[in-house]
Amino acid sequence: MGVTSLPDSLLKTGLKRIQGEVDAAFDALLPVPADSRARLVEAMRYAAIGGGKRVRPLLLTATADLYGVDREAAVRAGCAIEAIHVYSLIHDDLPCMDDDDLRHGKPTLHKQFDEATAVLAGDSLHALAFEILSSTDISADPFIRSELIATLAIASGKDGMAGGQMMDMESGAEDYDLHTITRLQQLKTGALLAASVEMGAILGRVPQEGRGHLRAYARDIGLAFQIADDLLDVEGDADKAGKALRKDEGQGKQTFVALMGVEPAREQARALVEQAVGHLASHGSEADLLRALARYIVERDR
Amino acid sequence: MGVTSLPDSLLKTGLKRIQGEVDAAFDALLPVPADSRARLVEAMRYAAIGGGKRVRPLLLTATADLYGVDREAAVRAGCAIEAIHVYSLIHDDLPCMDDDDLRHGKPTLHKQFDEATAVLAGDSLHALAFEILSSTDISADPFIRSELIATLAIASGKDGMAGGQMMDMESGAEDYDLHTITRLQQLKTGALLAASVEMGAILGRVPQEGRGHLRAYARDIGLAFQIADDLLDVEGDADKAGKALRKDEGQGKQTFVALMGVEPAREQARALVEQAVGHLASHGSEADLLRALARYIVERDR
Image 1 (cartoon, one colour):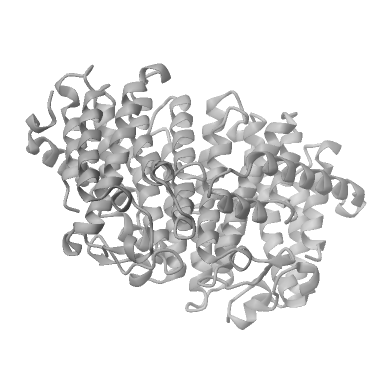
Image 2 (image 1 turned 90 degrees about the vertical axis):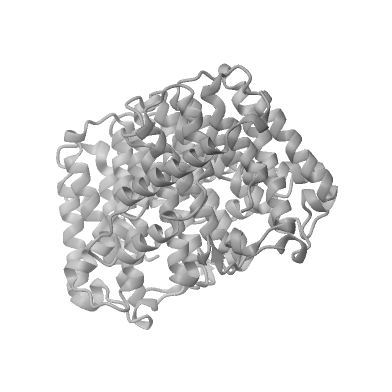
């Protein structure tokens, strides 16, 4: 099945649905307390509710849907992975990191509140992710819970997202080749995207040996996602993106686009998406949302 | 059994043993990679290895020892809770938080490395805690793993340590009474100390209804611990403490000592320790280390 034959409306409906579900779940997870912790929880809500495309929860729920997973449990798990994603954005935006003023079209958390609250709100969302996954609301089976937690902890720590972030910080000082950039991006962005798909499969009780095609799909869209991000950084519209662009060049950072050139990078992203869709050949129309999502990842304008 | 009859050597041996075990476990958990993530892992090692009293791992292993828990598993769980404690110190020391230069007698992480690395190393230790607890090295029983994770996630997040930290940050602006200070400290320091005892009991497969006396013990030593910290801040020796003191007064913060006075606070701490020891009456000499630890908490000079 070709990518272009997929209806846009499937994706639009899917995105809109998960955005509403994630917002509602975070709203329920984060009641504002009556004491002076209110400021912390309000900061967590500011960052977690009402912004973001929710690509990771959509990946997770769309994968879980292949295996008939209870929707509420899948949305909860999606909130856990989104809590990790949001905490990483809060900390990345800090003055000592990327020093960004704008995120999802509104002031970054440390601008709206203050830096100390931003550090703490990030840490609290980080803890919330594991609190969500260790709850019986996710699954009555503790083996499922423990496997979800192991997957998310490894994907977000030194051997995943945080490790990739450190490689990225060091990339100004060191001269990375395409192989190293690929490894960096697989950790920094790819690990959490892959964990989204993996967690959907875990909830679906797919055994390790049955997850190969899903992992291949996730690996390909992860790389395509990052190339598309690099292209957006060069060519995108900052208003649509809701954040500052043209930053990689200013920071002297190596990117796929810098190493390959704009057109070859775009070709590579498209080829990766075709390849990703190919890995879903064993699934029928129930995987159309995952196919549409793969396409969206390179065609999006923010 | 009175507190004063307990031998100091039991505590000294216990502290020395757990310090060696935690250092060795972190050393094994944190091999330095060959790529540019090396800087991140070296920062994690700098903060996690060779410093700190290891009170939380000692509490956990001493509780686990009451129930014959495998030593290696208890030490691993102790490392998870210590990873949370260490990450919180790294983030608390940041310029936007307490802005401290010294920790355990050496430069704080952001002074030795840089702020961005300190944020990331803290985040990576945070993830490591849950990676450790979700591994089968901790327990072959996923229910045990999931219960450990739920306990630690709740104790460290908005309803525990991070929430208490936010209340503390707001305490300059708001006028707290003794009741509110007690609540603040129960969250900021008490929650993680209580989780240490709770996690030892979980590993020991003690059912919820059998943990009441351990929770009462943990609550009392948690409060005593904080009063002792306040007294050290007023009366302590900064060289021995290995960190800056006399900070509460300078920041206009309410403390137990400020609200009660030095001598009544000291009396209160001692009474809490006697009460804590009283909760262990159902245990024989196998609980002597927990008794000695309670006493140490108020008598320590750092």
